[in-house]
Amino acid sequence: MLRATTLAAMISIAAFAATPVALANATTPQAPATSARDTVDAASKRVLEVLNSGASEDEKLRALEKIGDEYFDLDTVSRLVLAKNWRRLDASQQAEFTREFRQLMLSTYGRRIDEYGNQTVQIVSERAEARGDATVMTKVVGGKEKDYQVSYRLRPRDGQWRFIDIVVEGVSIVSSYRSQFQELMSQGGPENLLAKIKDKNARAAAGERIEAPTDGATATGS
Picture: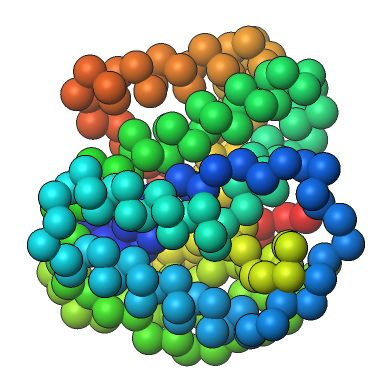
């Protein structure tokens, strides 16, 4: 199950708060100057610095969004969570979905910053994946919960590693949302999907707590 009150959830805010990068920029990947391991380490340290600061909740959220702009590939994530259903959306719907999905992630995790329990991140290992991807395995220690494993899937883009999935204790955030969105697509196509996400975002704006999906396979896919 996804632990919405942990450091991993806070990193998820940054991960999926990233501003979309124009798809036209998606050219042949340049070789990143740093390793995927170093990228995870740097991003984790920046997130920890924000969370441990004396800033307000809103200031912390804005700082996490800035980190997301630097490290995460929201365009790729949007395609991954919809998988083959991405092609069922026209260009306008794809852009709308990406915007609403970004807001859904903020609605789901963004108001839980005060639940962070002073965890730290230990880098465990790194392995190469298909498509030039890399997975970095970490352990989150300390705080209110027992230690647990978090893996980060990264893909080269524009000369740097960018996050495309987070797997907490074997549960992929991308795959969890994919399962949820596939069901919505099967019930009413793109219109139903967008309407349901917008409804959740509106309820969150009105103060309702939006829960994260809790099922999902470990594989991110291509």
